[in-house]
Amino acid sequence: MAATLIRWHLADFLIGALGSGVVITILHDISFRITRSEFQKLAGLSVFYAATPVLLYEAYRGISTGLATTLHFTYPIIVMMIGAVVFRNRLHARQIICLFICIAGIACFYKPGQAESASGMVLAVASGFTYALYILFLGRSGLQRLHVMVVTFWISLLSATEIGLAALVGGKLILFIPWQGWLAIVGLGLFATVLALALFQLGVFLCGDVKASLLSTFEPLTGVILGVLVFHETLMPRTIAGIVLILLSTLLLVMDHRPG
Image (cartoon, rainbow, N blue to C red; front, side, top):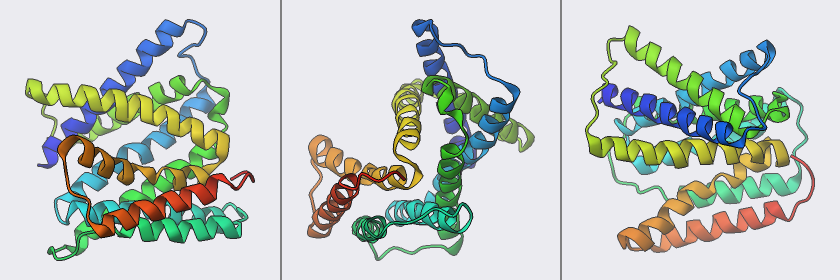
């Protein structure tokens, strides 16, 4: 299972690097070249970015996906706490209210009644912690001077390299993947890595780490909506309540025009 997850993420990030590289090549007016300082910043960011999905998918092995996802999406809290304590961010009352409303909405997606392991919960929280650090350092990296696709290319390439080296050292580097798996990986790499990573980076640069982290909690909501529309899943009352709470927190947040 661990080897499968490692090769999945390795291929995903490689597809992400390839896709963003193609975009850079087509655009012509941007370059792959970066300075040594920018490379060091991107390398540091890639460590946190690569660790996040590996930790989360490992958490899925020990606990339910609902609980793991709920614990992972505590990262807006971590962003706020570290930002306030370490970086002296000023938190506005509206942001704090939105945070609690959003967390209540995410909690509605958790389905109780399944056996959970302590290690799985620790891994899920750790994935939220690494993602929060990625968001915070990204917002303070000064990399907005680079084209967003250049940032996406280097983070994807460096993340793939790090996971590949870790797998090679651990003896878990397995390159064979069925063709059905490659189709899924290509889709994941293009949409979840190239498009999502680029847009999220742009969002952090434009509206700040706190707002970007809170607005990104639309992810579980989107999953529920797609489940209903595509897979004809049934909406439970608590799920509807969660959707309403997340939408409310987002509406209140975007009405706040202050930066951060």
